[in-house]
Length: 337
Image 1 (cartoon, rainbow, N blue to C red):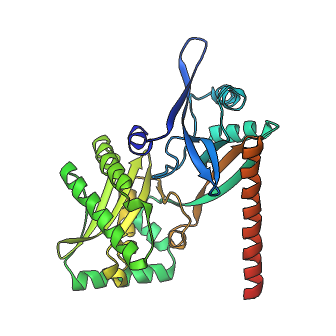
Image 2: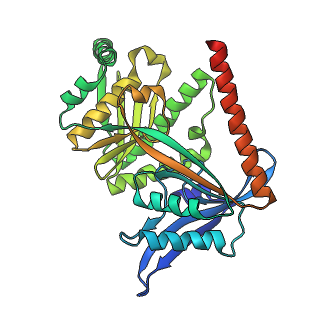
Image 3: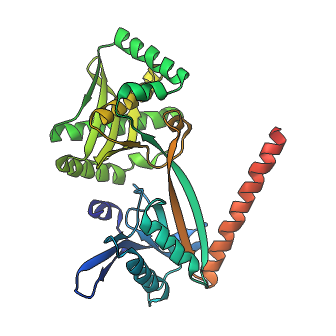
């Protein structure tokens, strides 16, 4: 979070709340910041968010609270934010893991407070629950995906000197991360789409955080070489028993070889060999992720709007846009039928 704040915190106010018990022991932390943002293109909103929200946004955010103190600390933090002297237009508690006890407590407390306008959205993030044997996982995949992997793996080995490897040297980390950005940019150019991942701020952040995670033993950086040239990179983090897959990059010139599928398969294989229990795809519910798993983790966003004129206006505009979007998709579906 320190690295994220150094790169992305410019122009915002740091707001870290601490809670101590009667013996002056630290029992809770609310890692927050305050940002002046413009909602709906014209409404300036003073917004309180978790550190890690926005560019390079982190998943599974929330309060950090000592076990068995969750209820009391959550109440105290929310009472301070909702009824204290701080001025805000919007509280944005985003990307909270639903299965976390602190998330449920925060949700319950916020929804009980009267006089505020609240919006709750839930999202599903695909997750692979890894078996003990790699062969068991491969057998669980669909026939079409297994057929594609066999065909493209044989094609790669037949037409190239194909190498799959992992980075174990800090100097190589910088090189491979730079290759990841290059490959991601190539894909964006080919598909004519924009991506915040290749912005100067994102490059600076990931160059720094990849080195930090490398020294902590958390970084997992895999790559595929074809004829000794890097053509695919998988970038992730190992923490506890879960490998978090953050980003894939591959050269679109080799799209017929399914490099993305091949490097993902090798990454999952290494996760199983490392005795991981989960491979987490993180944010996004793209179709390709569901080809690899039927399991999901659910996250929730809880947004609280102040009941004054500006907060209410932002809330009702958001609700109107949501209704318009639902009507549009319903009409589109009916016309399609």
